[in-house]
Length: 424
Image (cartoon, rainbow, N blue to C red; front, side):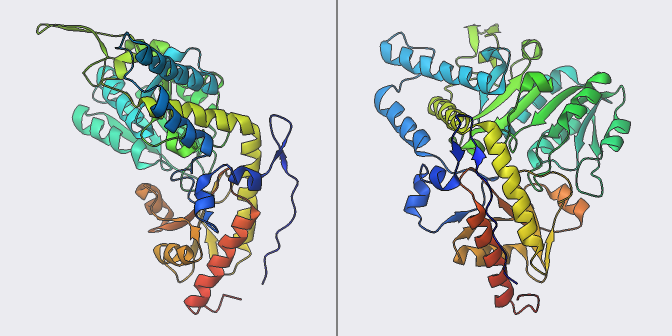
């Protein structure tokens, strides 16, 4: 059975132009260097546009020096660019002030910072941290480490029959002992959109603070931290077309001001004696040592790139492409979607009867189709779903319906190779 690729209207961009993935793809050198590549692993790490690559190279050529410490012109220019990147992130998230933006290595470090700085200071034995079954390991393990150290309780909100957060069950789990809710914004295994606005409202009503993991959300939809009213928000630069090794922790200024530092070293101090050290105000208090200066600048360039396309246009493009991919895969006998009920964004997880996901990914690679296979750093969710692993296709601004057609063709090729009767 053939899969019909229907013509769909192009999404309107913020600047009034058309959102055309074919044109956008030309801005990514990797596709020129790898003709025929169908890259469907953007949820793991997005490819980089020329604007980011060239901007990083130009910074190193012209303005590189350490920041905050030098009185000479080169250091001043580097510092100005680094702090301008902080301002850029604040505008992108609609933070109240750039001082609410802490640069970290990625969302993983951001969550660990909250656990070790805020958690150690404000949690006590018997307090509860509430997560969900949808979480990435990075939003589970730091809280387990804190549990083992402090004696707090880790409470897990279940998913419903459709693979989304069971909001009613979540609400019933909230108690006066719940001090923090830490939850994903968009699930990395299923692409499911979590109703985070309702999560925040319910958590705040019982006096808990809220941390949102925005790794899959920030590249795909407009995020307004003031509208969400979350206390913490984290994301990684490499998933939103920026460099690796840079990420963001947003926190409300009052919360940051109350938190002690996590790591000690240069640039986070005011004065040091052998008797006592006094610390900088936030955010510098949480940025010990030489930061990833180029990474922050590159992240700012990546946010410029996404804003140039329009975050609403990106959301609409990825929502439409996700729906189309689900329909196309379901049209193939022997394919099962994992956690596919409800709205999804940018990610489709699936299994093919009789073929292990790792074998699928290997066969797909022979057809220049790059997907992810495994547990996707979400083993508790895999256990809950009763599967060992899934194949995961994830989309970006450069993805289109031709990529979906290539994905479906690769599935059928794998079925033929395994001699499955469902391949037609």
